[in-house]
Image 1 (cartoon, rainbow, N blue to C red):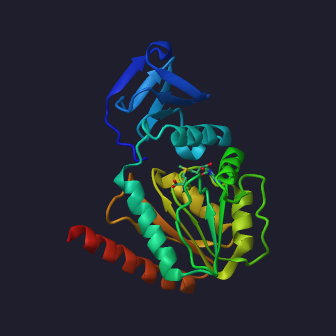
Image 2: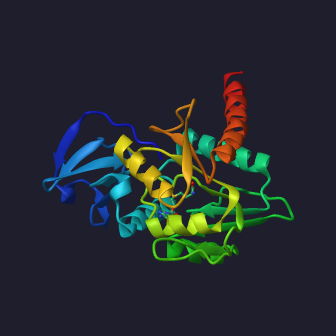
Image 3: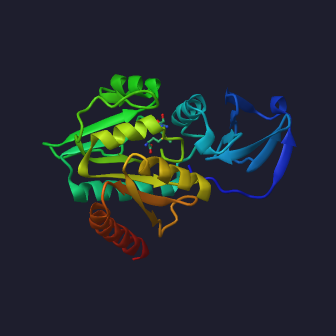
Length: 263
Ligand SMILES: C[S@@+](CC[C@H](N)C(=O)[O-])C[C@H]1O[C@@H](n2cnc3c(N)ncnc32)[C@H](O)[C@@H]1O
């Protein structure tokens, strides 16, 4: 999923170059080896992951664009490699969740490969996604998936979740009404954890403010392994005390992962 920007630019005619338009402003190349910045019919596109090109930053993509991109990504695993960075991020967030052992857990933007492969017998692990096709695909795979996105509330009581998390979702837009719902359903001593990559400084500040406006303060933890471009782990909670406590747990997991990697 990580993209690496080289400074090459190339002008091209879309008809001759083996691109499919997935949605206006979102292209899929027929090979993963293209340039990082291209120009098609006067519009500049940046490479995203291996084979996609997008005409704006990930945070500015519309939901239609995000869904087209993510659906294509899961349909084309051969074209779009996840890379070791993705597994590393998933593994760190999974280790944190296992260390916390929450009774009630919600995954945002789970896609069709929920992050946790097993859970404690007496705990509740809810997966959710904004895309109705993903909800349907999960259902076909025998998994219940809540439809939660822009304009779609969470169907859970206030203060229901101990822990909410998202993996490779927060570089897309998270809408204010969603954040209101997250804030409503998170317990007062609960935590939201997500990795945030790609976003620039300004986009990160906007994301932070959206959460602060719903009462959630954040702590940004840099990724010592630079798993993907500008990756950070963000913790959100309603109090500094909860943030401090969870930062301690998270730092231990990071330290142990780094030491295993170096040994
Ligand atoms: C890149 S995929 C990641 C899927 C999975 N978490 C993983 O790491 O394999 C992003 C997923 O987030 C969903 N998504 C994007 N924006 C979202 C939003 N604002 N709220 C909830 N889900 C969203 C997409 O539909 C997609 O399934």
